[in-house]
Length: 277
Ligand SMILES: Cc1cc2nc3c(=O)[nH]c(=O)nc-3n(C[C@H](O)[C@H](O)[C@H](O)COP(=O)(O)OP(=O)(O)OC[C@H]3O[C@@H](n4cnc5c(N)ncnc54)[C@H](O)[C@@H]3O)c2cc1C
Image (cartoon, protein in one colour):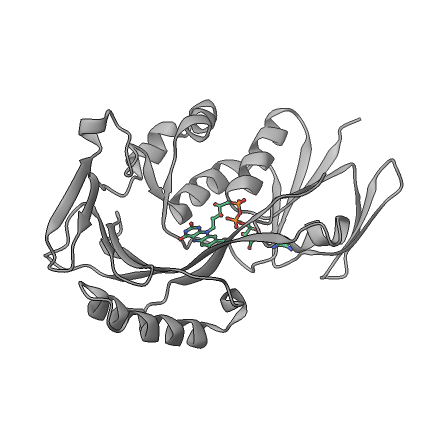
């Protein structure tokens, strides 16, 4: 009998799992909460096992061809001068900028593109209730649909709600004291194919990275104790960054001005989940 898997989350982990499960002959349904595939996000450095996995899926060349074009990383001081430089070619394809430097959305899209012919992807739905009887999992979705699966694989990222349903009170995040806003801004002729990294005072940093879409990926990060910023609405998150970075120096004014009109804004407080089982 063919075993039927349910995977929740159609991002990097979920689509990869779906691809491999189908490769091994399983029937797979993937349910993604968002109404459409999510293509946002910034750089992922693919190294080690991740790179090996892409190679084994036949996607390595495509991932390299979809790279951001970043050639290295430089650190900038408050006068805009370069104080340190690490070029990827001089480090045998490694270093802060990896040889395979690809946008999260492009990587997720590549894997989703390969997986969607093999699995049944359903968008705009998620699990509202799940029970098991030792043989199977009985799943109720927010859409009202109820189904039976042999195995459920939760790939919903760090804030997974299904993991909370199955392991209540075991998902307490370990906060990493780092709040970051990531967004896309227009490119200027002065921008270089380098990750430019400026550390300001008070635990703040401003970074600018090239992409292969003709724009620049900006990140504003602050080292601080978290205060629930991840749950604020976008307007409040932007206000917070605006106030915190107004006097940060270097390219902060340009980045803050562009933040007001960006249509690709991702904000999070870094955290890890260490489960007891
Ligand atoms: C749009 C987006 C932009 C990102 N941008 C950045 C970035 O710029 N920098 C950075 O460091 N990290 C970013 N991340 C996080 C990064 O993608 C992940 O930490 C990392 O790639 C791990 O991948 P993952 O597949 O485990 O989880 P994620 O990439 O977090 O994906 C989880 C997926 O599950 C879906 N999902 C969540 N809850 C449910 C549910 N209950 N039912 C069904 N589906 C659900 C989400 O919509 C998402 O598609 C971003 C994530 C997303 C979704």
